[in-house]
Length: 326
Image: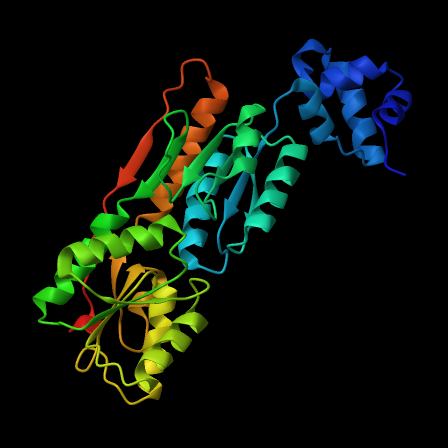
């Protein structure tokens, strides 16, 4: 059985309250008594129950982070930014992967609420999550990540995806590309829809291929369908780099030359983009900065809820040109 605080008190010959003071308010305990208690803790191998202590104090030292796809390097970088800020301030991060499934997201939000996390950072599967609204109304602060909040009483940190799509389209147009395809994840995801809006602003009508998820395998399948059906596209813009890497593989497998026959551009500028067989042009998002800013806003709201001013932070995307667009 686990060693209890009572066991420590008995071994040290002091009261339970004295042991509690040593653990939480050591300055209140005489040095000699403190040494007795610490020796008993070491001898018995006592491990304090921080969760119980935090619940009693009403202040958890953990944050929840719910992302769409933990296999996506973009969200790995976001998580690093969140963790950097959290650890600096003494918080742990509980990482949850919704896998772009609303039911799974809802389950994680329930678990995080049961764990009494201090706050939640989330990239929702869909806008207007009722479960997230319930969480917030019950007193758990939340910040949207890689999204723009539709309501003024919630913080969000994202990137101007319409501008990002427009950057990609303008670049392809400047290369003289006229038959452009957009390969995307579900258009119910706001960033996918916004990137399409920006692309159309720059180039007009495009061929749209919607996939079930933002993963390389779906990019490969979508491109093979385009190529096998005789599509005459001379450029492909993908809603993220993983899809673009799948398109790159499909082009190679069908004998098409990237940059010569087909200009290819992705989104996110993950680390693998520069190291692909044909280095990938991409729209860069500052993923680590997004995570850091989101964590800062969340903890500001947690620590000062009465004076905290909600913010909708929008970073600007950047075009990174590599060999895939010549």
